[in-house]
Structures are given as structure tokens and as C-alpha cells.
Length: 68
Image 1 (cartoon, rainbow, N blue to C red):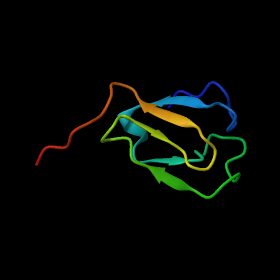
Image 2: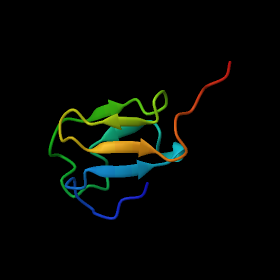
Image 3: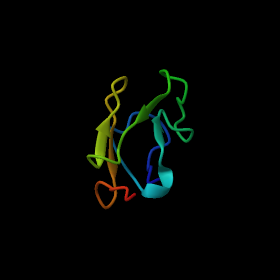
Image 4: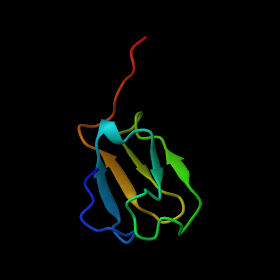
């Protein structure tokens, strides 16, 4: 996960498929206990907004599609 700031003041964070499933706040955030953990569905649209802190997470490379 690319995170230049170690707290939850950064409003845009780019993540990779290796970071999935993604939740906010992430363990790397200094204020990791600032709100309840919420899992964010990035796979379908390639981005998700945390409903608690407003941080936008964007999946590097865009949405992923699962094949059956």
C-alpha cells in the first residue's frame, strides 16, 4: 500500500490487489482506532470512499474481475 503519511489525514490512498480485502482505517495509520473498521469493496469499481473519514482508496490498475 502506498501511504506517504502514517495517519488518517491523507484523503487519497492508492492500493494494490495485494492489499485486498481492504479496510479503513488501515493498520499503518497512526490513528488506526479513530473510527470503526469498515471493509471497502474496491474490486468492482476500482475505488471506494470511507463513509467515516472520507478517505478515497483507489485500486492501482483499476477494477478487478473475478472469473469462475
